[in-house]
Image (cartoon, rainbow, N blue to C red):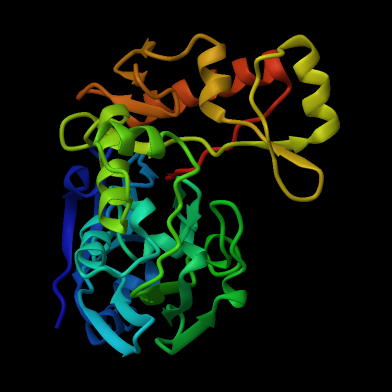
Length: 340
């Protein structure tokens, strides 16, 4: 049997460190426990919010409903040969410790995604990515439990409809499914090393590493992220608050005439991806404070809580930034975080 709690403060369960109370709260560790919740009158009569690591969430008010905390655990080997290994990973496992578990076992493919906060279950939902790698490249399947009836479902990679920080779980299946596990296929040898993004090569050189491995790449990524991003245990944040926008190439060429230093990276369908951090910094927001919220002094994509901010203050700050970027460049920034 599961135990429902009332009026639970969600501050320990969101990396922004924001106070917000859940009317009802329950933690689930197994599919059977989740089905007990699905059959309860509380679940059937209240709105719901599923929480994993709380690292991609902005709580702007109390949640007048049921919060379900995902505590599914387990890493299982489904099959392996000399070249590859296939793992089934429970959705409540923390992402970074899982990455390091793989790196320490010399299983390659996700080392560039080290130190990303959150859970394994959130990885396909957001199609997390960093330093030239997206998690969709290694996902074979996503398993879930349908909230309306408790039935198990399986999505293959194509059915996940992965896009840039997007998937079918953010739209069509939003609030309709509980991701229970993720199946990933990783390399055991002949790893594809991805060094061309960010400052990985420079960092490896500074570490005196001339023959990179997945272990050294993970170390470099961790060093880069720690040098630029605040630790949410010390300074509340949710990592990158905004997505990098994509605009038509004609729009990009028009803006570059006025702002010749604006970076842009060709993407698909005649689109250009613009670094949101550059846009925000160009509008003067880097390191600025707004009430008890602010923009991190080393990474303009990261909005922070000085310890006393409310979710509303952080949301107000995000709107001010969006307005300034739109006025100066004619580009609309979209939040990467889920706003509740």
